[in-house]
Image (cartoon, rainbow, N blue to C red):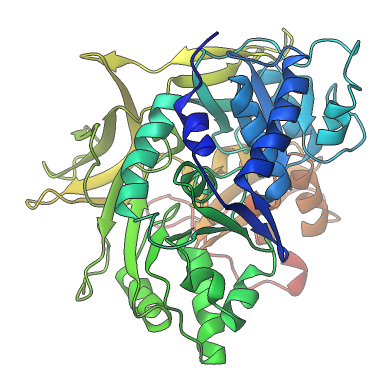
Length: 492
């Protein structure tokens, strides 16, 4: 029998309360008992090392149990946001070699069945065909969609060793042992959530599940879930929201560590955050999905006065370097290249891009150099004399919206398929997306175009404003002018 994976062994070491949700608590003993029974049922359906089980839902006690159950089998889990359209979920499940999505019981569709834990325990899958087929190397922890908005489905294959390396340094630096653990409220489909979900569990601490919608107001009114935490992990946009609410209510929090990631951090934002969290240590954590959550971090000093907050330095086991940029910005600028322990195995890519095949994924491994996996990030960074890296944005056409990676070209391609649309351009303005759409049919409305996008893309990827016109505005250099012109409320 294969040795138990280290992630599971560390969870088994936990004592006391593992999960607190809506006033109820679940002990580590109960969590492991429930997860073990589910794992046994999954094993009976062929789930094990080398296979992937998609898990869709909000970050809550049920999905935590399901993820732990998958890990107990030796398989990998594929976390999927609850708002992801069915067609996109089904396509990604097929890439992962799965015909079932574990989560909330729903109707079957698109060749995939949605089942909950009770279904699996009741054995409803018996005789229904293979639940999963092998698609990834043994020792894979999870497979996460890179964006959910790029044409053909693609997942990042992250090994146990990369997750263990990340959790090892991050839980030590964020001092997980100091408080109760961490609040859990961010999207399951966002690898930022790995910190708050697995971090406390491998540290024997507690997860406090917050309402995924109401949490900013709940925390602003009563910041207890933040105050007693070991650390809080969230995006800069989320921190801005709760800080504004706290300011309106005249509330402050004594949270000890705020870890922000998923978006660029600005100096002015840090000043706002310190007003609501005067005692907090603020850490800017950077890392693409291809490098296991966070591969660079910077603790912002209390007297920081700059504009662009550095992303800092690499943790143990990770090597960062500068690669060439398409245009010359000088010797201290380049594309951030990541090597070492936290780099993912590679991509699981849909193998029927040409229209044939069964939609299953094929592993495309990342290149290695000197025995270390290597990933060119596509991010423009600079390296200062003191060894600190600073992020300057994406080199290509991908942007981040509320921490999620969104492919602008994929949105434009989809808009262009709507009857009567001549061309489309999508850009990022402030923290949201805007679209200019050139039409030949005057009856086309922003509402119709948004519905067309919603069939394939999650809510966070939809443009906040869609302007319809007969011409795409450009700058004097011929680049797209993405700032929307004055439009009527129908465009919003």
